[in-house]
Every structure is written in C-alpha cells, then in structure tokens.
Length: 142
Image: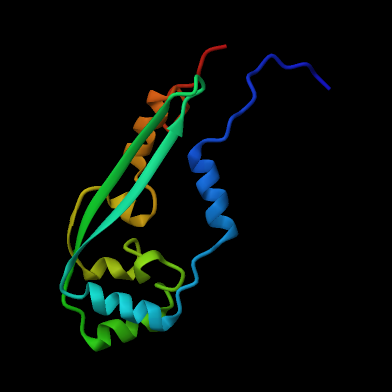
C-alpha cells in the first residue's frame, strides 16, 4: 500500500443527503400524485431546498434556496393523462418539472434546477467558497 500524503476525503452534506435519499426512496401512490396536482392546480407554490457544504477547515456554508412555481388550472383530463404517464410517481410534490409537467408551469421565479432537485448555481457557489472542486472549475496545479 502506497503511503499517501493527501488529506482524507471528508464527505460533504450533499454526499450524506444523497446516501440518505438512496436508502429511503419516495414512493408516492397515484392517489397521492392526483391529490398533489389537484392542490397545485391554478395556484402558486414554493419549492425550498436547504444546502450545506463543509470546507476542509471545518467552516460550513449554508443556503436556503426558494423557487416559486405557478401552475395553470389543471383539468381532470390533464391530471388523468399525467397520471397515465407514471411520471409523477416517486417525485416530491407529485410532478417532474423537467418532463411533461413543464406544460403545467405558467411561471417560475428562482432556480429551475431547485425544482428539478438540487439548486446547482447556489450549490456550486458554496462548493467554490469551501475550496471544493466544481464542474467548470480549473483543476488544481500539483
């Protein structure tokens, strides 16, 4: 075994959240999805995600990201077709904005990727401030 002088990798809060999410998947039933869509129909709602990044020196960067989404008034056939697609099963709020449900969104204010699942811009900013590599960041010189 080679003796490495590298600092051991410390998991970020995102790693832990992902692991937790992988072990306890969301399993909305069609009835729950229908209820969610009926509640969201013709209304605005907020999608909130809390992110936390731990820097190598132990500092924490935290951010709460809020996105406002306004859905059109959904008809029974709209909801029935969406349920038939199966897309909303296993999705928080009963819909996937990156799929067919995009046709329901009249207005989005804030981070689109937050609604999809993780606010990427804000997460990358926290990772950079914690001196952690991100997509698009230059590799460190040796």
